[in-house]
Length: 205
Image 1 (tube, helix red, strand yellow):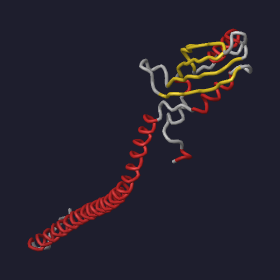
Image 2: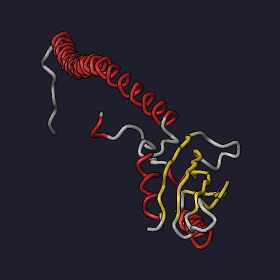
Image 3: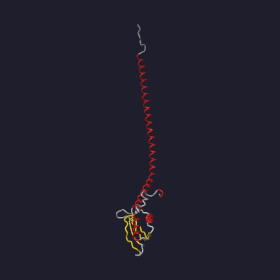
Image 4: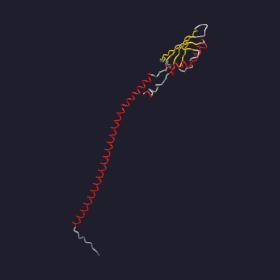
C-alpha cells in the first residue's frame, strides 16, 4: 500500500496558482491588444484609402469643371451656328435661280420663235403654291398656230412653270405670218434651289 504525501506548504500552492492565473490573464490581454491593434490598423488603412479616393475624386472633379468651362465657349459657338443656320434657312427658303429660269425658257423655246423680253418677279403667291411669276413677250414666224400654240405647249413642259396665260397674240401684218405675243405664268416651288435647307454648307463656313 502506497500513500502520497503533499510536502509543499499550502501557501506555495496558492502562489503557483496565482502566477498561472496572471500568466493566462496577460496572454488574454496580449491577444486582445493584438486584436485591437489589428482592428485599428485595418480601420486606419480603410480611412487612408478613402481619403486617397476622395482626393482623386476631387482632383478629377476640378479637372472636369475646368474642361466644362472650356466647353462652354464651344457650346456658345454651336448655339450661334445653329441660330445662323435657322436664320439662313428662313431667309433663303424660297431662293430661286434666275439663271435656271432663263435656261428653262431657252431650252423649250421653238427655233422659229424669238423671246424679246422676260421679267421675273419672286414673291410667294397667296396660296403658297408658287415662288414667283414671270411674263414674256416674243415673236414667232408661224402665226398664232402652230407658232404661238407651240410656245405655250413647250413652256408647259417645264416642271416649275404653271398657270400659263396668253395675254395677246397679234399678227404684225395681216398678209404675214409673224405673230407678236405676250404671256405670263407662275413659277412653282420646284424652281427653288433648296441649297440652304441644311444651313450653310461646310465648305462655306
